[in-house]
Image (cartoon, rainbow, N blue to C red; front, side, top):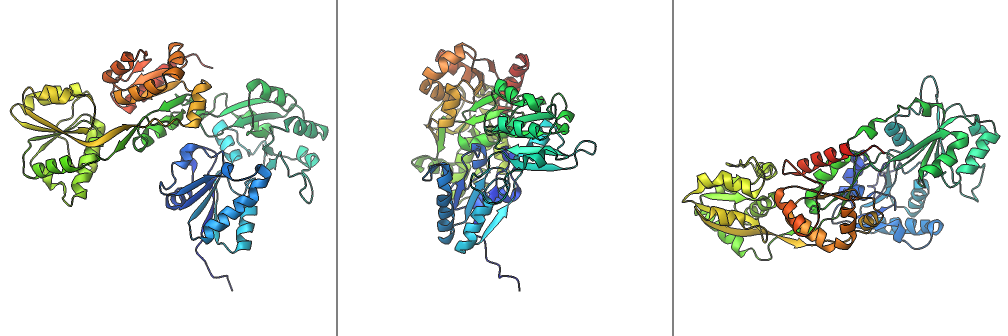
Length: 515
């Protein structure tokens, strides 16, 4: 008789090779539902963004002990959380059962009586082959692939790696965790008859914009690695299939491949921009300079909602998507619905704000060609003369709309959301800035620019002046804010949107000499 099914409490989940879009649907589903996530140190921050915001999260780095001594603590943590009734995700790089020690974790869970599920992930060798266009199997060159560890447990029972057999293996060797022992691996393979001229490659951070690789014959591989500066962790590929790759792999043709970009948008608005950067080949870093919050007191917002319901306004003007969200969410939270807007015309500063209105099944009556306050003023002035105009906006920002429209109309404004300066120095981002790895900084508003450049003047100013970091602004107003602080810009978006910033980056990158 089969054992009775018990709902799993712990999920051993493969996070894939690095690109967050290579997570499986099951992995995304579990991360979104998790109560507790225990993740490997090398899991990229972008992958962690799929985690349920309410979940407790812990990196194995923060458990007691050095690396060999951490595993009992990992097992104990999983067992305790599972027995406490939590939905636990153990997030592991690549595939959990390929050099991921998930077998040991599953054994510990079985012995403790904690039900579990194992979710596969794309392992590094598969990703490296796909992203470098190296066919790990090929009808003419390789009918087999061997996945080999380059770093064995010193006291493991049974046979050690048989390098003599691997030297004669009629296929592709994919060696994990072998960079530190590369000279020994090369020596062993050649000693047992592997052709010293066998094509080889090493790749680090496969599938991401930070991917780097080097290729050389087996006997020259270690010196090629040192000259290229490749370090652990990296994957070693050995076999004739390595020479079947094209001169330039498809991923390296992405227009921003290898470019490191700092994104400063509020976290809840940054996801689409980050993903577009990744699809262009960039390595994005997120460090929000502003936090969007609800008003501390909704009294004024509720008062204007009552006025809207009584048709006290002719026009309702939104200068951002946050304004749309702030007002409409409050309308719905107050027990009303969007019929309170039935007697008012709507204006949106640009296509993104208009798109947010459409999410609520509302169509803007006015959207200017130029997605800036000046464009909105120009479009509205002929329409609002003698009318009553309500501006839904942030607690701070430019006063242009109220001042200019107020010349011909009765204008009031209400803060439906608050912008708070919250530059929290992310250690990874700060280290990348100090090492000079970040080449582009995307500045998506004047407030964002002031917050970032004020706080990190000491780190940024010299690098911007030397051209090591290039600032790209979303609009003329943002450019003015940057220049008022004494910084120069490399480019200004011609379309005042994040897509315009992307286009400016691609243009700048195309002007740079190839590395």
